[in-house]
Length: 259
Image 1 (cartoon, one colour):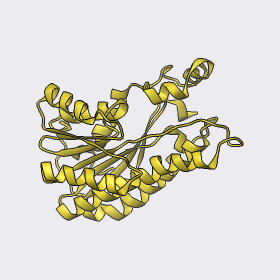
Image 2: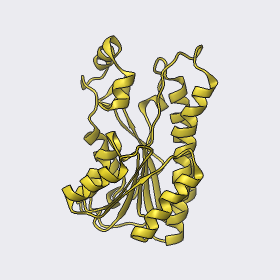
Image 3: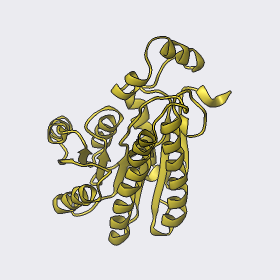
C-alpha cells in the first residue's frame, strides 16, 4: 500500500538516498541539485566519466553526502555494481530518477534497425533494468520508495524523424503503467515526466536552424524548457506530496500538445 502522509508542501527529502541515472549533466544534474537542495544524499550515476567530479561539486555546493559511480544501463553487471556501491555507502535507496537518454533522428524509411534497437536498449530496456534493480532493493527494505523516469512528449504524439525515439519512449510509458500496478502494494510510486524540447546538449543536437524556430512557434510558451523546470516536476513526483500519483506521465511542454 502507498500510505498517506500529511501534506506540508515542503517537498522535503532530508535523509533520503536518491540515485540519479544520467546525473552527470543536463536534466539529470539539475535533478540531482534539486534533490540536494531538499536535503537528499545523492548518487550520480552516468555513462560519462565525470560522475565523481559532479558528485563532489554537489557535495560542496549543498553540504550533502554524495557518491559518483559510472553506470551503463545496457549492462546488468554495471547496474548491479552501481546499486551495490550505493548500498555499501548509504545502506539503502529511497528515490530513483532514471533519465538516461539517446536520440538519433532519421525518417522511418531510412533508419537502420540497429539504430532503433539502440534507442530501445537505452531508453526503454535500460531504464527498466535500473528500475527493476532498485525496486527489488526497495521491496527488500520494506519502506516503499519513489521512481521517476524521463519520458517525452514524443511518447504520445508524432514528431518528424523521431520514430526510433518515439518507439522507445512509448514502450517506457507502458512499462511505467505496469510497474505502477504491480509495485503499489510495496509502497512504491513510479511515474514519468514528459518534457518538450529542453535546452540541453541532446536538445541542441536534435533541434537546430529552421526546425528549431518552427518548433518554438508551435509551443504556446514560445520557448524550449530549461533543465531546472523539468527537475522541479521530477522533485514533486519524488516527494510524499505526490503519494496519490502513480503510473502517470506528467507532461511539461509549454502547451505544445494542447491542440
